[in-house]
Length: 358
Ligand SMILES: Nc1nc2c(c(=O)[nH]1)N[C@H]1C(S)=C(S)[C@@H](COP(=O)(O)O)O[C@H]1N2
Ligand SMILES: [Mo]
Image 1 (cartoon, rainbow, N blue to C red):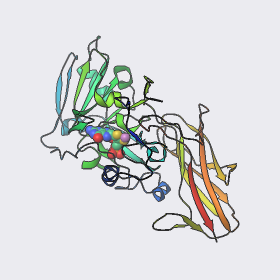
Image 2 (image 1 turned 45 degrees about the horizontal axis):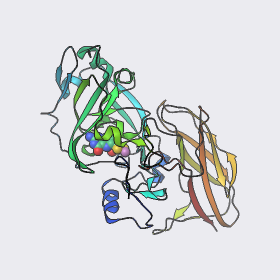
Image 3 (image 1 turned 90 degrees about the vertical axis):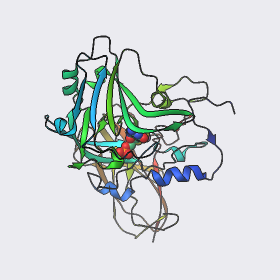
């Protein structure tokens, strides 16, 4: 197979491989019933860990800022916690969410639609530290390094991502040390992670311990791998902000194995959430067997957070297919068909929920 070195080998096989299953049991999604809460309850936020969780000792840990800066610095956690802090409600989503629904399926973490969660993150605005470290005029990006280490498609690496200096100076970019008012749990990046609100999760480097200003754009593995390539020769465009998506809480009750829903006849309140990274949600529609009607939007809970929606459905007994689709303030609407690319990124095609009404 003439494979793009940055793509992921696709498979025509319907069956999930043992490797994909092993990834899926390490990296779990948010159970969709947790869409009921504004803030995802502890332990239900989705997880994506490329290598092993590094168990970092917060008392020994330091954050180092260096490279092309005027004043390199090194700070302990308690020193960072003594600085003015900011708390933001942020919906985070994995860029690979929806990957396992693609055909052919790019082989990687096989997400359905549930790689999402919303938390209240507290930390120091990155720009407050940059004002002290002072990147040199020739610095173009900051490279963020996590404490985890592994190989990916033959490349040994610490997990690293970069951001342009300009983006790093935005007020919402945090060096977070608390999640929902508690120290960040080990699996979510203890003791500190970068938080890039509005962007897919890969930008928010966990177990952060080093920030380096560089004078040429960073071309590390994770920077290149997150690219939309439509085919093996497409040079592609970088994966950045979160695409518009909505999800519904599957109504009624599920069958254990198939998760098919059973709902009693009569009015049913359908509820869900919609988000579009840094962009506002303008509209959510509910589809019943292909007929669309508007849902009612709840009040927003934050500029980077999902927005609740609800709709009343009065079904007749029988088999039905429910869907929902959101439109953002830029006029982007979720597609009915898959936006295929070699890495399986940004598949925001509508969720479908088959329901039996009795
Ligand atoms: N150091 C490090 N940071 C990381 C990752 C990782 O494996 N290592 N995974 C990234 C990816 S792909 C995603 S989607 C988010 C997931 O964050 P969460 O597990 O807290 O939900 O973390 C990002 N930050
Ligand atoms: Mo991700």
